[in-house]
Image (cartoon, rainbow, N blue to C red; front, top):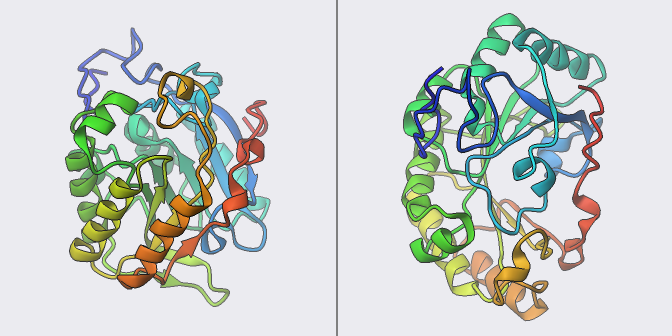
Length: 289
């Protein structure tokens, strides 16, 4: 498998070696369980059937899931076993199947969903660093895109995620996601059945970047639904960057939140500031794998 799944396009044969993402061809999974801490329309009553893939094609220095994104903790499984996990989570009453960090496993997602397609929505929960080609491959496979828009500034994305092109890639990816799923649709319980949710994590010292992201979403995305996040906690290599080696200040979050409301992006969610804690990081103990 010569891999060009993501914008890195490392063209490495992942059947023999690991890619830039840090993993091989078969899906590597760190945890699969009913997750209760996503947005309410994703979590639902019983929890989102969340599958945490190991490896990552972006590898942000401050990643709260660095044990799986950087250290690649997890177990290699077959496509058949991945399909089996979908079925098990569905039988447990999952609101949806939530694929976390899926960008480097587009081929595995397609193959496993061809083996077993659950009768609940499939969520593609990504960093936004997705290629248009991969997203097009997933047309008719994905029901919900839960996507990050991390940076507007190229130099910031280069420094914190080693991806100078992230802003352009994310803009194109989000527009493609909205084109694939033009409208948000809900079931009788208020859970999202189809749609796009754009997440933005406000970083310390960078409220200006957050405001530019919100303005771009307002001007470029039809029926925007934004989830504004305050849960930033300095972890992993954040200590290497003086501007983000601290928690978010209340005033910083207030500035961004008030701007979000002032431009009319108030149909989504905004976290409480006390969400900035490591308790939102799961124990990657192999549960459900």
